[in-house]
Length: 281
Image (tube, rainbow, N blue to C red; front, side, top):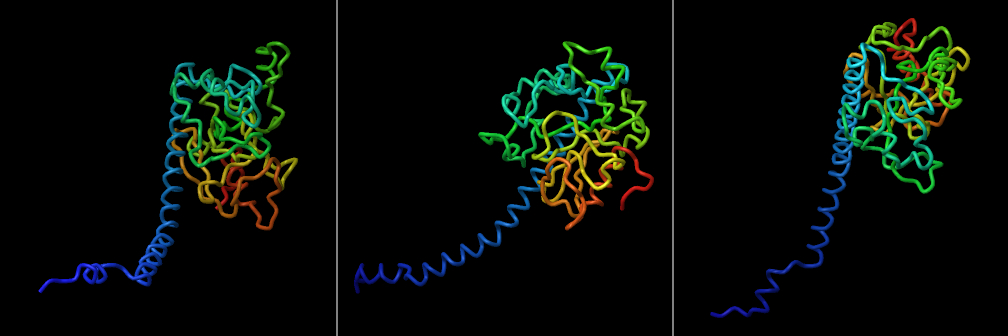
């Protein structure tokens, strides 16, 4: 007996209700998978960021080895620094000018502009118009190779003042040699950090000692890695720090007093620069 083709097709086709059920199931599965995919993306970006800072840290070591233990200069508004510091990345042309990276003192040790960028940073500072991702998201902690008064006098060119000793004061001298790094010891002494998109400008990461402004951050680390930031240290390792309450990129000199207080996170950062009497838990 022959089967009517039209009736056979009708038996094989989906009804409207069946199609809606299938679409609903797909939507539910997608909703379940998206958070997992988002977390996987964050994890991959953080891993890349940790790797970038490890590469910069290695370059920092190689420079020091080539210059008898001298640290790479961390000078402001000067071409003789770890990055060419004549322009800041929070304004043009510095925001998109890779020349500032390729003419820096560390670039020959790792000639790749990509290692200066955080993969999770998809925009520039708020005041940047037009707003685009910037060429550098990492900065060097100020004690590492910052210029003192003597260096400012010796290397003064064209009236520029590279002295940053005033940032920390006499109690916390800026390190000039690898052997100077003792308090904190190299394994705990921060060198590079992934900086807040709202405070990054020059290559100098300034940390408030807590003496004059005890309840404020100065420059701020990022929190864009799922409430976490990335740092490298003077013994060569880099790592991801999970923040207790720091949940977003802050502005310059943001108070850490509540709500919610970011005091514990600020104290942890200060320990990595100044070695406070007790390490925050």
